[in-house]
Image (cartoon, rainbow, N blue to C red):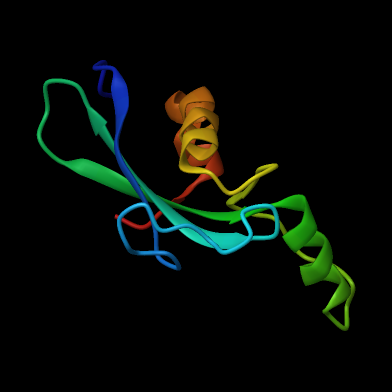
Length: 105
């Protein structure tokens, strides 16, 4: 197992691909967010995917379904769709990211 420190190399969203692009209403948003994680002193990264929801979007997503439910594997719920908030959240679980994110490397 690698003993080097992990770090976030980049974060981007499939749904909002432009530089600095954000959803029109960051408090009512969903995004397929990808995070590139690397190790210090090493080349290469692993890419993890998260379904990022705000509570408002999560609520409307559940209400819009016939089953009135939504499964939550690889999900991150944030108050506001904001890359700083998302990055700080990922940093809190970076050493266990395999348990939370979907490895799409």
